[in-house]
Length: 109
Image (cartoon, rainbow, N blue to C red; front, side, top):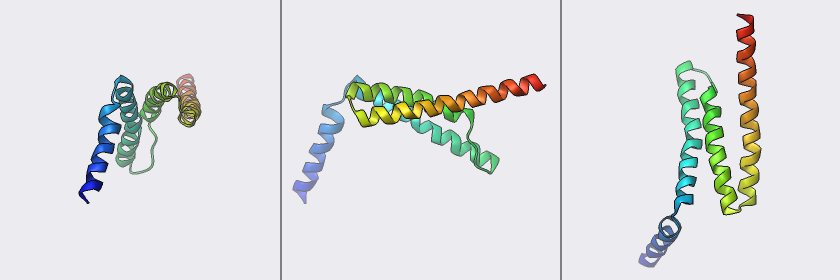
């Protein structure tokens, strides 16, 4: 059991300490921004007592997704790159819908 715990401790040290650099820090910041989208969506839904996706959800999606894409490119991870690039297209498309809807409401008023 002690050997297993030491092995796990060595693994965590290798993964989280030895390879820590500014790129890993960027990855953690990007992940935190990306995670914020879930927090703002949850809070907005709780306030409205129904499922809501606020514009800030898409802002955090774009910020986090862009930084994660940069991180994935640096790490040369094709799966991560493809996933983040496709996600960014969807996030920007949703922002486009929001901007167009706001323009239409202003022209009606």
